[in-house]
Every structure is written in C-alpha cells, then in structure tokens.
Image (cartoon, rainbow over all chains, first blue to last red):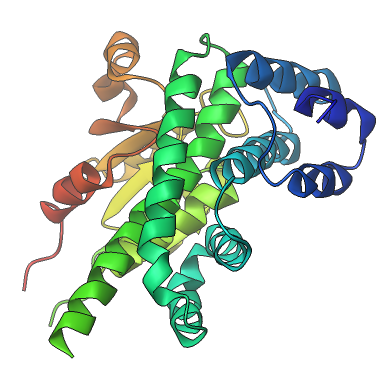
Length: 170
Length: 125
C-alpha cells in the first residue's frame, strides 16, 4: 500500500468511493495513532466542526468513516465469508440472529466463535490506540465509531453464548 | 404479565441507536430511538417512557443537557442517564445531577453495568 487512509480520503470526495478503495485493502493498512489523527484531520478539513446548530449529517459521516476503517482493520486475517457475515452483522445488528442462522446453514457456524474472538481482540487493540488519542473532536469521532462497533460485539457475544447453550441442550 | 419497561434512547448516531436498541430488546425492554434532542422530546411526550438514555452532543454541543432539563421539569421522577464519550471525572466537574441526569455511562458503554442499573428500574410483576 503506497497511500495512507488520509491521502485516500483526500483523493476521494465521494465517501462511497473511499469505502470501496479501503475495502480492497482487506485490512492491510497501517492504523496507528498518527494514521487516526491524520484521517481525522482530513475529515475535519472537509467537514469543519461547529458547536452550535451542528450539521448532524456531517457528524454522522464522521462516525461512519471511523467505524468503517476500524472494522475493516479489525477484520484483517479473517476469511472472506466470515468477513461478509461480520460486515452484515455490524450494518444490521437488529438482524444478527437471522444472519447467524444463515451462517449455520452454510456450515460456517463452528468458525464463528473463533472469528469473533479474533475480531474482538483486534478491536480491543484499536480501542487502546483510540484511548491514547489526545482529547478533542478527532477522538470524539473515533470513540463514537468504536462505541457502536463494541455495542454490536456485546450483542454478538450474548447471542453466540446463547446459541452455544441451545446446541448443548439439543 | 406487566407491560414491558419502555426505554427511550436519544443519540445522533443511527448506529448507536440501532445497536443499543438491539441489545435492550434482547434483554426484554421495549425500546424507542430518536436521532436528535428535538425528536427525543417529541417521543418522550408521546411514548411516556420509563427510562431515558441520552447523548450530550447532538444538534448542539449541550443538546442532551437541554433534553434532561425539560424532562425533569415535566417528570422529575423519570430516570435519565447520560450516554457520552465524556469521562466520569468530567461528568462530576460539569455537575450531572444539576443538569438533570441520574448518572452517566461512558462510551464505549459497559453493557453489563448498564443492564444491571436498568434492572433496578424495570417494571415489576
């Protein structure tokens, strides 16, 4: 990879194009403190923060941006079909039970717990980096994006545990 | 069988609203969500919730405090909790209880803790 996420963001005025470009990297991009700060800076250059009558659409784009990058990075090393499951699960947490049933039907159910463990560990590592970001709006957007991901992780953890108990009872 | 306990979640990030709603519903709560303080107050008056979870920075930097103030004027007994990226130390500094909040859950939220607190406010049979 020869461009940082901040550089890709600046080259792609359409956020969907940015997402496609980043998704192609399969999580193989550096995402340390400096990378997060640079991406945040690029975002705020395009969408400057206001503290009164904030533009909520632009604020939400910030959460979407950080969430997307954190999730893609945390899924590096997870195999394709399981990655697709996680992408759908994080996009539609209200449908996770149904998605898990589909996954079991496809024979990938037994791999879910292991893949989830990998993803959770990667997200915990990224959380440690976000925690070290200096106080300010870049950190706020990253914490927002991270929070919704960790919420879904909590739900996945509960539902995976429940499905394990149910299969023990069968 | 009592009615389910109703929780109103107010947060400007749809992903937070959807994920918190999914967790609360999996735990047996009826949950409604609003994406701004203004929408939150409309739902508060329409749905008569039992508990409110509210973000701070939404359409204004202090939108959550404005929501809590109005709710406490209209229903002082209603538990209103702040869901925010601010830490507990900051929360103490800004005087959460004076703003109308009964407590704060720092994002990323510890749901084991949040659910244990909500349990104390759940409608009893």
